[in-house]
Image (cartoon, rainbow, N blue to C red):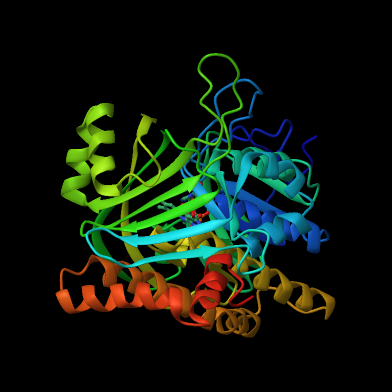
Length: 435
Ligand SMILES: Cc1cc2nc3c(=O)[nH]c(=O)nc-3n(C[C@H](O)[C@H](O)[C@H](O)COP(=O)(O)OP(=O)(O)OC[C@H]3O[C@@H](n4cnc5c(N)ncnc54)[C@H](O)[C@@H]3O)c2cc1C
């Protein structure tokens, strides 16, 4: 029912949803990070009235139908670290997510044309797995279904935020719906509107960019050999190739693949090469992939639709202003080589929610500048380490410099032999390095 001061919200998928004029906290962007933050807030701080604004419409999943894609929950697959899995477990969502996930029990790193190879085994590291891989679209189905059940969160999709500014003691968010323009005020706005965040510009936050000159081709492939829960990372002179295990397709009948042969492929290539490879027929694509990846997974027998993602490093130099902050890819967007982007954002969101909970418990102001600066400072070291780690990995392995090549191969060989090196990398892969 619409109450005084509220308008019917034509774009929303929530029946009867209304667009309020004020909230305690507004989230701009309903991608993986915005939605995860909303779920964390609903659990930890249910007394806060949260409004989540998303530009696209969230589809409702019909069992038996193809998985729906949105810009935030798309054709990619994500390697969820153990810390992220723990977060979804604490939210009570892992039982719904797990049937769509596959554990990584071994990590195999190699360098094409060189002799260095490293293997990490979960058993040796005495962990159940290094993490689990799942399709982003499945994450969307489960997380959005859960969010629709949270009474403290108003989910407004199909609304485009067109301005964000700080006015006195409020963040003022202007948005456009099919019903016209609307202004929403809150003591705190969190912008999780992606790498090209317009909120970052509206708030005057500067960012530094590094174009890697690479594009990632993302697709699902099938192989003649079962994946046996092994994740491969192969470095080539063009860029890294990641091949991750995926759950079997939930289909029956003739089209079903043999068990454990579905894998997620992320193939980073120079942008010109990616454009060429994108145009190849499926058979030509698999032949070139076979050439670049080798035979460790057997033959590539099937390839799905290919999607292209330009790769860059974007780091905001400042992430907070009084009454607003940027989160997720809006704050830092990394090369996917180490599978760390989303996992890092989840750790940011966890710390943010704890800081907000402390403020609420003390009767304080959640948009207070000192509180937001303290959050930013608390996250600086983890972010710096992960950004440096993934950037060095890309640049170290892309270099044609023979000395670097030798060093990295010695590094890879030494890595198998050096006590302490493996567990350290394993901890990075598991997202357990900093919490
Ligand atoms: C190929 C690839 C593979 C990856 N693999 C991994 C992995 O294995 N592990 C890992 O941890 N990370 C991985 N990542 C990183 C991960 O995908 C990102 O960190 C994550 O998607 C960031 O989500 P986000 O919600 O911040 O941004 P986005 O997904 O970009 O979402 C932003 C949302 O904001 C909405 N929006 C934008 N502007 C507005 C507006 N004005 N008004 C309203 N809404 C707006 C958009 O519609 C969108 O839904 C990978 C990235 C790539 C490119």
